[in-house]
Length: 286
Image (tube, rainbow, N blue to C red; front, side):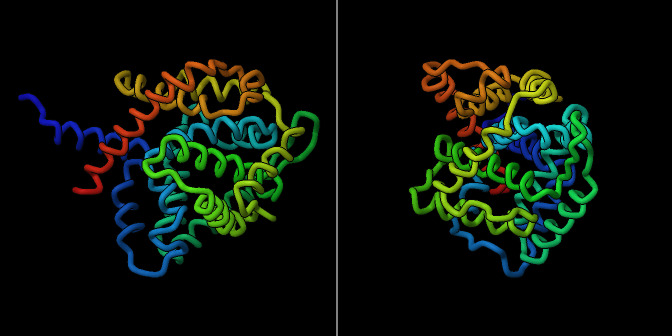
C-alpha cells in the first residue's frame, strides 16, 4: 500500500522528534507544555518564537561548530562529554533544557537550571599547558552562551518563518540573558549590538585545535544516522556552515564557497527547514 502524504508527514515528524527529543521526548513535551503554572516568558515573546522554529536545527549545528573554537570549552567537551558516542544524547539534553526554560513552568525551568549548574560544578580539568579549566567558570559560560545566542539568532534571521525586526532581536538577546544569569553567566549581552561586541572580545582566545577539528569532522561527516537521513542532515550542516563567519573557516578546515552559499545552499537550507517545519506541524496537530 502506498502511504498518503499525511502518513509520510507524520512519520517524518515522528522521526525528527525522536532524534531531537529522545525516546522520552513525548512524555517530557507533555509535561513542559501541559503543566499549568506561570512561565518565565509570555507566549508571544521573541524567545518563544525563535526557540519554537525549525531554524533551530541549523542554529544548533552552527552553535556546536562555533563553540569548538574556544580551547577550554572544547577540552571540556572532549574529556567529559561524548561528542562521538553520545552526540544525540547531548542534543536531547540541550533541546530539553531550551524547551523547559523557554516553554515550561517557572518551577520546572529553575529545576533544570539547578541540574545544569550541578553538572558544571563537576566538570573540571587541566589544559595541555597545565592551566586549569572549569565548566562553571563565568567567562567560559559566557562564551558558550554568546555562541549559542548568536547562532540561534542568525539562523532564525535567515531561515525562520517570521524573522524578527531589530527591536524583537534585541528582546530575544535580553530574554536569553535572563536564563544565562541563572546559569552563572556574568554580564551577558542585552542587545544584538552587545552580542556582537561580546563575540569579538573572545577573538584572541579562539583557535582551531586538533580536538576542535576532530569534533567538526565527526559532526559533518560521521553523524550516527540512518543512511536515508544523511542527505537531509548534510543540507542542514551546509546551511550551518554557510552562516559561520569567514574567519572561522581556515582554523576549522571548513569550506569557503561564498557564491554557492548565497544561492544553492541558501535555497536548499530554506527547503530543508520548511520541510522540518511542515513535518513537525503534524506532531503538534496530532
